[in-house]
Amino acid sequence: MRRFRARFRGRALSDTPGGPADPGGSPHDGKPSADVCDSCSVKLDRAQGYYLATARIVMSESFWGSHFARVRGIVDTFNWDERSDLRKFDGMLRYVAGSATPWLICENCSELFLFDRDEARSYAIRAADPPDTGPVDPGECATQAAAGWEHVFGRWPASVQQPEVADSCDLCAKNIYRGEFAGSVGTTQLDRFRAIGAIEGPPLSPARPNGTWLVCRMCLNRFLAQMHRAAQGASQPPRRS
Image (cartoon, rainbow, N blue to C red):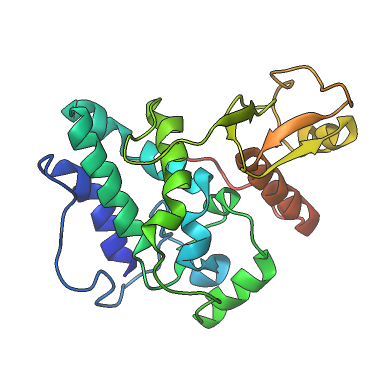
């Protein structure tokens, strides 16, 4: 399963612009000889990772942004037209959403998601399926995937209806669309995030009239993950380019 996902990431976009690679059969046949993160392919001990259902994976714009960032070089190299771009986007969306088994996620990639970390670690240790394991209707996560695509490539896929932009994140300037989850933080919280290294510089925008900053879910996911590690006394995992 995991080796297949790693192979798919490396070969799907290198095929002709007609669509993603279709390996045939189940994408989860066979057993891996070593565990790897299903998001970034780094090797890890399963007991040090987290098990998440596909529904948790595909509803994260942060995941989609990371996923598309890993293939951006290939997309830019081929310089496909808009129709080919859409085929690639739609193919990756269907493939990822169609995963029927849990995803093993490393500590670094855990910052892409909001979840119960102790529970997800327990499922990984026991190699047990978390609740709601199984494929997801691509239509349920198309907006999140499209937002991730826009974040990486600077354009919204024409095959997905774009919601109205309601605001932007005061920390990273990402568009926040109407109906999208967002939070707010005050000066004390910002200082806490800065103390643990979650924020390296000042906010991009001044505080709102109520003295807080509007924060997108991508930033909140990262902050909460790093706060959890700090509370557990865990060291910050090294960043990978």
